[in-house]
Length: 220
Length: 295
Image (cartoon, each protein chain N blue to C red):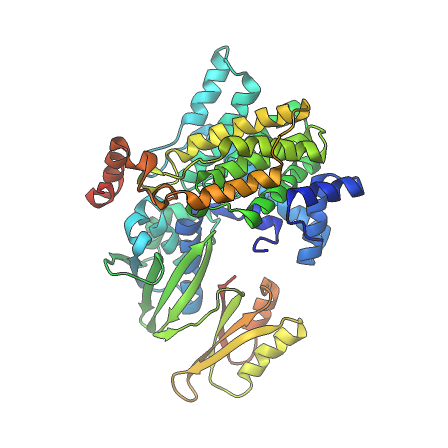
């Protein structure tokens, strides 16, 4: 059965009006912010499909920017996100794309500052759920059936083991895992799909592991 | 044990002599592995969110597009100033359902029950009945568990998504859930909750999802008004002893098949129904520019 929890029916708590176009968009923005690790100076947001056609009415734009400012799906400040971005000296540009995308609700976000920039593609898959499908040109092949985290880390021995050890300690089973790096000894990343959602306190623990830069939930 | 059908839900409640809400709570404890207190607190938080959205909506809000907002205030004012036709309890329920959906359209905070577009029915019925039944906080939280139990059966056997099943799956499900929970809060039996759910859903069958400009506003807000009022009337019928000739699970099955045979134009694509009326298209153009209002 697909719906196993009462909170799938009574919930989530969210800013309206649409779970897919608002809550899901905020989640994509927030994942981008968390993966970048800090507030960027600028962001270019490319919208595709239904996102491109209806983003103003559904507040997809403010939700994405709210997410980039670090707001959760239920944060009332989402409504004022465009003004708050200006106040925070965050330069935002929206680009409505005509081209097609694999999913109707797709956003490509580029963001950066003096120290660097990055790019990701996120999709909103319904009911407020969102997924990252591409990061810096790496295609993330998620099954979409399990919760997943993305770990950015230094390419050092023991980095992978320190993460998997924490999961083992808490009896969280890994269903699928991929590791990738651009260059030996530099930045690397791993994508881990687990059988259950990883609670916040364990995410905090993972963030404190040696050689780990960022740990972000990319699918719930 | 996981219940898949309404018949199993009622059977478990009757066998153990517990309310539907208790069956749901026990199942949630078993499925999530979380302690009962934590689950209760989480639902309590959702209840607080719902109460706040009702309050905000009754103060008056306006959506970004300008299509909705302010009707909850109008209804309350009418109730205060005039002798109404349908009575203050029913209109209080309706105004609180409208309030929630107006807050949703205005990008306020809501709790999806089961979706954002149908978020008004459950809190509308709950907070509209509050002055009449004087429930404890515990009973109000249980109202949400009972709603969730019936909603879960619909979600697993049919759909709660307008894109998949039309509005019958969203406001229909929400109204059915609310009527079943109203019966339990008023002291009815688990079987009477199921009867109320059937009666409500039967009257919602075939309802299409045809939002103007694709926005969760017109006719969504008013559909929640009517959904919540039907929930109250169905609950009263069930409490009076009226039963549904077609059992609840079969009504849910019919809803699923009707959703399957519904044209895609009538399932949240803004291409048919009210969205395709001259006024609907004109409004779409106003909100989004010429591209959206075209064929």
